[in-house]
Amino acid sequence: MELPTAFSKSRIRSEAGFTLVELLTVALLVVIILGAIFPKVHSAYSAETVREARYVALAYVTTARAVSLQKGLTAVFHSANQQVWVTADSNGAQVSYRPVVKLDSVYSVAMTASGDSIVFNGRGIAVGLPGSQTITVSKAGVTKSICISALGAILQGGCVS
Picture 1: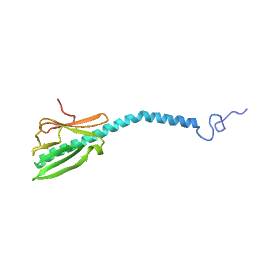
Picture 2: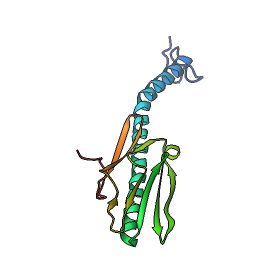
Picture 3: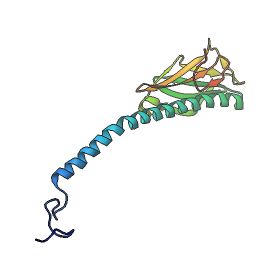
Picture 4: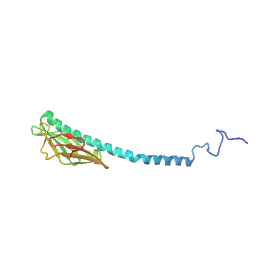
């Protein structure tokens, strides 16, 4: 009787390739691994989009303050209807220094602000704020905040009580 060699036919594997059971087993393992990884990737993506939206809002607040300091103008950071933009008063005319960004459509986040606008005078000091203003950006349980103090200081981590 002849022993099977590596090149001869055996009952374990045919020459046709993988069996249906082997392919289904590999497919099942791939589905299980992807199912375990997907929630982590999705939550990381949500955190990243919230962080990006907060950076945009922070850049706009910083731009308003910088314009007021550099040009000696009254600059306004606007935040209404999930949108942010910056304008400055130049001899009675409103000049747009940053275009309108719709945070809800660009980043799919929800933005809340304790006021519709923050006005910075020519010295970079916030004018007319009763207290500190908070801008909060959130999505899927991830929340990031920016705090603007009554004097115009910008804090990235939120307001300190």
